[in-house]
Length: 220
Image (cartoon, rainbow, N blue to C red; front, top):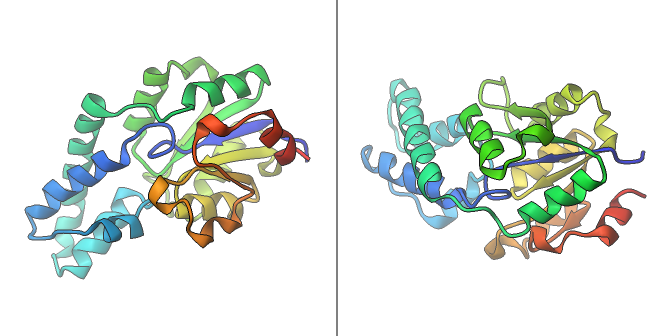
């Protein structure tokens, strides 16, 4: 099916926010006597904060009564850090201009809170171009479940088969493919060579590298 819509993840794809989420989690987890390695953070990258917090607090035998409190502390601190220190990922403006020029419907689909979606719209100056924005924050299931992507396509009145998704995480890629969408992955440099990206339709080292040749291949 000919493509007519594009959906973007946010954290780690449009803004360099993953280190700031990790910084916030490190600070709050420290209050519970928990210290995660870089490998442990990478293992849960792409999950929403609810699953991320529940996973690590449960493993460290923290009472479940603390899960919601710890999650909200991390979200609050992370959003403060993002507002202060987050930067755009290379190529973001160019890839948005590419799809704006093609008159594509444009959506945002993330596991992050709604507040971050609104912040990104203003930060990038793209509010008027976004046809739909969906968060999995309050959905029964988040990525790798495809619901947030399916909801975004529905809100744009577009078939999932007509959507191109841009993702940076493994869980996000699985969600996009489960939604039967075409998926472009832009992994972080340290994860670029992992074999599991083979499930994607296209892998790039940066959004800067996306252009007409890639689009034509995806639109065949």
